[in-house]
Image (cartoon, rainbow, N blue to C red; front, side):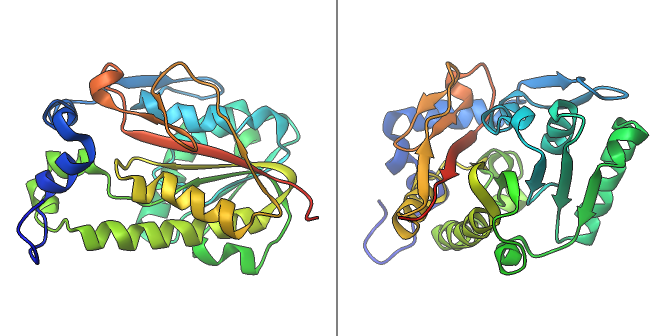
Length: 260
């Protein structure tokens, strides 16, 4: 760590987390990510980080009728959900930002046929307040929350200069609010997947741990299958230095049981 009383810089902060692995991990993030072609159910292919598909797989989309994507823009995961959902399923995609929502609409309209689009609703709500208005309604909820996105930071010095541990802590608080709202909106027996593209356990496992503690009577952890990436205490993380350039992506899955 840096001298007592001084804020650690970016490299010091993550070197403390990843030890000798950090330099190799940072170098892997500075390179281009490994992209996958998403084409199932689409009019034309969409390209995204290959690791982004794993949270959608953990969601078990085929088993859901009423599906919610809380932080949907730019739309890659929404396309993956739409391409896998059953013929009776309805998908709600949400983003509070008008600019990001416009991009989301464009992505959906360019890649999905009219029949699927007719079963998708685009909304503009504050994801952290969703549970105040809809409770116990959705079979599947994806909470792919805003996060530190360290790969973006190391590739953009302009954004990196604004990084601080305080921002990571703020994002973790916001992430928990969104996760808790999504859990409130989830039906008993439904599946909620929480995901980030962050490295910090404070934005990943620690957020899930808080939900498991505060919703102990109802929240049950699911262990997502996967041979790609590394197991964490509550989920999995895919890191580019150990996954052919994919990631970072963290994801964890929970279900809602009836309260005792």
